[in-house]
Image (tube, rainbow over all chains, first blue to last red):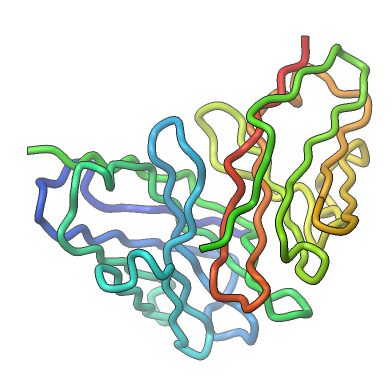
Length: 123
Length: 108
């Protein structure tokens, strides 16, 4: 059974750095074609893909936030960590981690999601 | 940047067929994926690679793609199918992985 769970602070202040941890089970991030992604969703708005780390430790980021994001993995602990610097109230959102697989055309898609963590940015 | 365009809302009566479209310039060459998100819950994958259905998803959900438009079809829609539906794909160079703006399906 595949499960993912997000953890981290529910409230951060503007300009602070957000650190989120995804703890997963039911699959291994050392298996070929396995990845974990972070996706966020502001209240009442659409989903936005943020970052991905794959089994080979390759990392990919959405262009608009690339300078603020860092993704890393600890395969032994079954964890993936996302940091986002210089937080702004516009970053208020539910942050999801998701197991990610590559399609035959090497396009990553999300087949299992965590329940999400609402992060509010406010002073 | 790249955009996928969905209608904000679709409404059908119980038992009718609901069709939700997703438009994108790269869809003739790129797969489309569909996610269902019920209120307060995480998204669930309902269609992958344009038309494939995960084993746990009911047969009432189907997908197709023609030209620049991908379509999610829900046959015999019921109240429990009410949700936001998002398409997901990428641009022709795989540089921008994006979700559509979402479509709210109402069954009443």
